[in-house]
Length: 242
Image 1 (cartoon, rainbow, N blue to C red):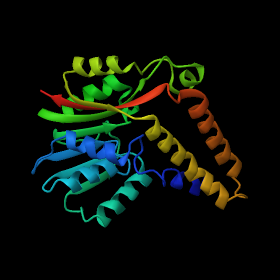
Image 2: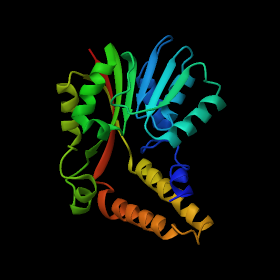
Image 3: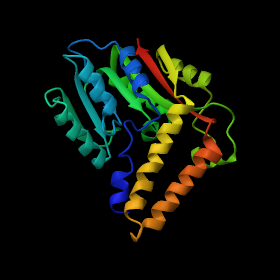
């Protein structure tokens, strides 16, 4: 595919099921203060990081992601919002990227990079200073998954919400705040994901890869509506690192 992947997330504000209101609440849960540094591992185009820095004067932000197109989009937003003196974004592997332990670390939807939730929690523990905070966004099972959900996400790796919290506690954190994506947030996220590609198809009906893009959208929509909708949840945990 040529242009289609570049437009695949064009209609999304965040690359996770997250509303503007909940994003504001998540940022508030971090209790950011002047002089603090926020590092976002797997930042995508860094929308949440930019909002966090933009809401609190004197806070600096660093973001890293391996998606070059996402970083390019994020850098354009950094400049457009006048945050070039306080936010830096890099295209790199989050697992090997080096930075000093942060006052606040963010890892949302990036657990695959460390082989799962436990690996992410352990990696972030070393990347947050003692007394600092981690904002973790990760999947969990709202209810036992059906066959299609297992096909998409696998049998291992995700657990019910209470077990996710217990896992965080066992990795050396204390829970400060917990919220989960609503069904409306999920539907909005999935609809926009599909709509970006559907609009590309409307504009490029005779493109040589139109059939390929259409098949991707149809498969994704079926997996969402006939599989994990209402089964697979997404949680945002604000965690203290004692």
